[in-house]
Amino acid sequence: MNKKHEKIESDVPKTDDMIELRDVSKIYSMGGEKIHALDHANLRIKRGEYVSIIGPSGSGKSTLMNIIGCLDIADEGIYLLDGLEIKQYSEKELAKIRNQKIGFIFQGFNLLPKLTAEANVELPMIYQGIPVAERKEKVAVALERVNLTKRMQHKPTELSGGQQQRVAIARALATSPALILADEPTGNLDSKTSAEIMKLFDELHKNGNTIVLITHDDSVAAHAKRLVRILDGCVQEVPA
Amino acid sequence: MIGQTFKMAWSAIASNKMRSFLTMLGIIIGVIAIVVLVSLVGGATSSITGEIEDVSANALSVTISDDKGHPLTLSDIQALERQDDSFGQVAPLGTTVGTIKKNVINETAQVNGTTAAYADIHNLKLGSGRFLKTADVENGSSVAVLNANASHKLFGTLNSVGNRFSLDGQSFLVVGVLEDSEDITTAVMGDNPALYIPFTVESRMAKQPYVTSFSVSPSTDDSIDEAEDALNKYMLQRFRGDADAFSVLNQSVFLDTIDTVTSTMTLLLGGIAAISLIVGGIGIMNIMLVSVTERTREIGIRKAIGASRSSILVQFLIEALVLCLIGCGIGLLGSWALLELIGVIAGDMLAVDMSAGVVGLAVGFSIAIGVVFGINPANKASKLQPIQALRYE
Image (cartoon, rainbow over all chains, first blue to last red; front, side):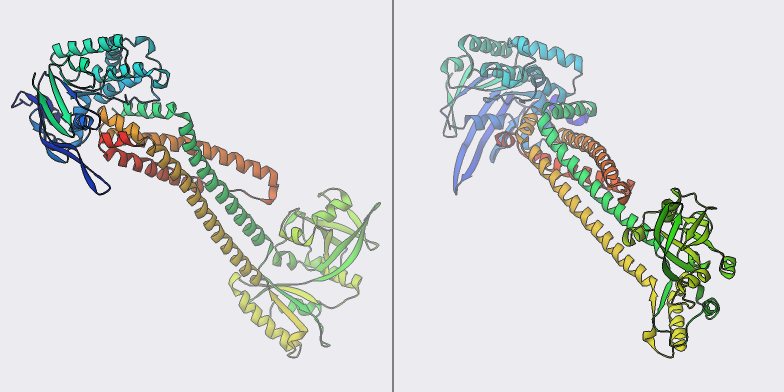
């Protein structure tokens, strides 16, 4: 068990790149036709970078995020996370990466509907094997950061879209992951809350976390230090 | 981690009460179907077999329709025992109808004249007192063995040994009362007053000095066919080769029929058990498949936040086991209650047999089905890429 743990944590990375995609493609067959959701995408993101990805709908930005976040596997090309090819990780190791290294904020929240906000935020830490007292503390801190302490016993159905989004954000951040991936994190939030969340991301970035953000909102994209455009599955850098 | 997974499993069960209840319901119904049906049919089979074995005896019954001038006497009958090694005991049977009286009570009863051997040959069970003795027959004593119905009607009790009553004007002493049993005989032939008196006394009453009907038991349980052959030979000889003058009924033929009946019933039992297993099993399978498949998205979410495949499988295994065990528990309680209720309603007519074997079968089977069909869809879902599971509708 320890050996696998070492593979992720104490591997001295060969590069600064946390994320490297080389000619990554994702192909779907629809009625005999082949559609490239991602078409030979190339992307390098360094440790500690704050990147926003912008593009119209259908451009493949969610597909890109899913591959980066280990939620999906590329059909062609290579994905290196911390210098190691994703294909070399075992299923258990990938689960650990999703659990400890990556915090994914979904556009559709993806909360467990039958659990309270508190229980939802707690769940990744249960899988990490963190003891109860420590978990409860981290949950409290995370929910406080998104201003949702008062609603923590409520289930998602009892929360507004914006509140659910904040629960999703709290869940992703509670484990203090090195890589934060956020798909339209402020989509359902009012401008005041949006501003607070973006401030939160700025803080995280200052603390050295790597952040990748998908947004269609230019003002949100402007918080990031780097802008990547994507169109028809093809990635285009925008000069800083 | 197991403790944590257990809590997660329990929380998942508790947080969706309707789905958990429906899953358990499938198992409850499956278990009740198997246990109740198998117990009922099993009980019925064994009670029927038991009663028939009780009543029917291994014996040959002979009826003479034409004595061809060579009628059988009591001493002929008694001598018959020594005629062949395969013969056990022999007893004559003379029947007539008589009126039994005690004080103001007046009843018509069947009067059976016979000898001491009759009780052994026909497996008669005495409730109190004794059966007829050879001395009673030799002396022509006015003694009688009553059946339970006759005792009740005359004396209002089964404890009538030592009392006197009148049969067709003659005073008789009760020396024995048969056991009061509701069995196949009473069910088939009706429960009427009957009594057994010495053959010599009955033949005088009925004015029939000869034996027109008698029964023979085989010397050993296996020699009944041999005895039948020997008896047929003797009778043919006696009645000058006229096979129509008499008839020999081998009661073991009756037993063979019963064997066939019980085999058929056992097959029926097996068939019903199999069907109830299938029905119960399909019910469990369906609900498990549906309830787990509908949680594919949930599995996707758990994977996305870092659950490994084994965590997912262990969680769903525990959930399935817990639901199955609780469902089995409730099902067994329900089966027991239902069988008790049936027992009360049906009374002695229907025995119910909730054996450990049936319980084991129902529980083992339900758990096996529940776990297999609970794990299988979870396994499939956990093999998907998280994003695929998340997209599942």
